[in-house]
Length: 94
View 1: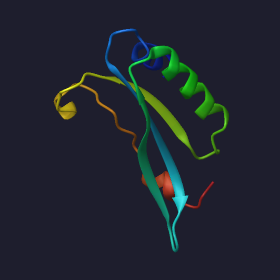
View 2: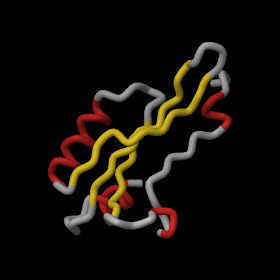
View 3: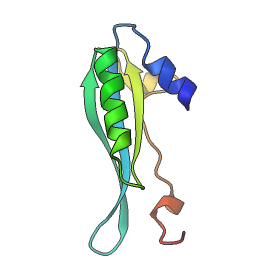
């Protein structure tokens, strides 16, 4: 994962997108929530924000950073911003 993050933080003029995956308790069940939490073209700012978010995250939170071209339909790329939340993540079993 560290290699992927390093690749995403290259100075290449692309957008740096930080996404958050989390498991949250709804009224009767757990749900998975994926959200975009930060976007910038500034690599230094992306590194700083990514470090801040990971330093203060809750145990079930997960952050990932992506490098994305602008004006592109992202699903056409080999890999694009996404976070998988599995059925096991939503279970009450530890």
